[in-house]
Structures are given as structure tokens and as C-alpha cells.
Amino acid sequence: MTVGKQQAQFPAGVTSGVEVLRALKSLFEHHKALDEKLMILKEQNNQEKILMDGVLDGNHEQENMPSANGKRLLGTSLSHEEDPTKVIDLQEVIDKQSWEQSQMKEHLAALSAHVTELEEDLDTARKDLLKSEELNRTLQQDVCEAMAQKEDMEKKISTLEKHYLTTQREATSVHDLNDKPENEIANKDTMHQQVMAFTELCQTFTVVNY
Image 1 (cartoon, helix red, strand yellow):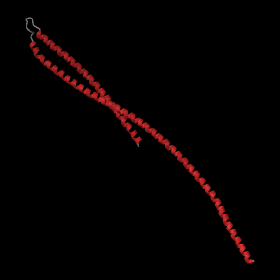
Image 2 (tube, rainbow, N blue to C red):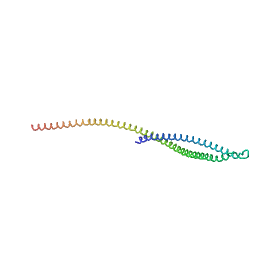
Image 3 (spheres, rainbow, N blue to C red):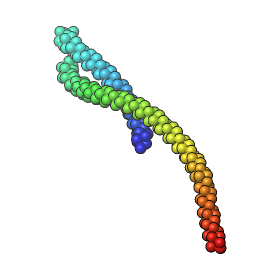
């Protein structure tokens, strides 16, 4: 019964290991995709920062650049009014991407922790499987030894039964041999008694006639 239970547990352990491996593979692929997306977001963020710095530098130069008559260029005030809107839009984009990056990092950290946990579970499952296999080998050896002992006992029992039957036949033969002399002696005693009785009868008859 114990051997059956141990053998029945192996498929479940193997299946669990396969499922863990599949989960790890899926997590690694997802992790890789997130890394690629994070790299793209960082690149976009860097480009937008460069663009925003260029816009700010250009506006600053335009504000400080005098015209031929000592006045600022025409349209500078309009550019100055438009620049804050662009800066705000870019800042919102940057803030959004920074938030997404932060979320990505948190998600990656959670995934890494989960992967570590799965790796530990997989290692534990492998160790349990090795222990189960070792226990199964030990039980199989015990069963083989028990079967060998059983066969040896059966051979001994068969030999004892044969010896018993032989002894019983010999005892019967000896008993028959013992009964034969006893019967012969009994018959001789009977004949002797009959002879003695006949002799006495003859003597009695002789005395009477005399």
C-alpha cells in the first residue's frame, strides 16, 4: 500500500515541476518585453528632454537678441506666450512617462520577487522529487528482499512437507511391521491354548476309560 501511494505521488510532482517551468518561461518572456518597453520609454524621455531643453535655449536666445534698432525681434512676445504651453505639455508628458517608468519598476520588482519565489518552489519540488525517487528505490529493494525471503520460505516449507510425508510413510511401514509379529504371537498363543485344552481333554477321557 505504501509503495502504491509513493508511486502515485510522482506524476503530481512531475506535473507541478513542468507547470512551474512553464510559468517561469512565461514570466521571463514578460520580463524581457517589459525591459524592452522600459528602454523605449527611457529613450523617448531623453529625446523629449533634449527637445525641451533646445526649445528653452532657443527662446532664451530670442528674448535676449536685439533688433537693428535696439528693440527685440517682432513676434518675440508671441513666442514667449506660446512657450509656457509647450513647456507644460512636455512636462506633462515627462511626468506621465516618469510615472509609467515608476510603475514599470515596481511591476518588475514584483515579478522578480515572484520569479525568485517560483525558483525556490521549483528547487524544493526537485529536492522532494529526488527524495521520493530515493524512497521509491529503497522500497523497491525492500520489496525485492521480501519476495526473495518469501520464495526461500516457500521452498523450505515444501521441503519440510516432503520430509513429513516421507517420515509418515516410514512410520506406517514400521507400524505394519510391528503389527505382523504381534499377530503371529497372538495366533501361536491361541493354537497353544487349543492344544493344551485338547491334551487335557484326552487325558480326562483316558482316565475315565481306565
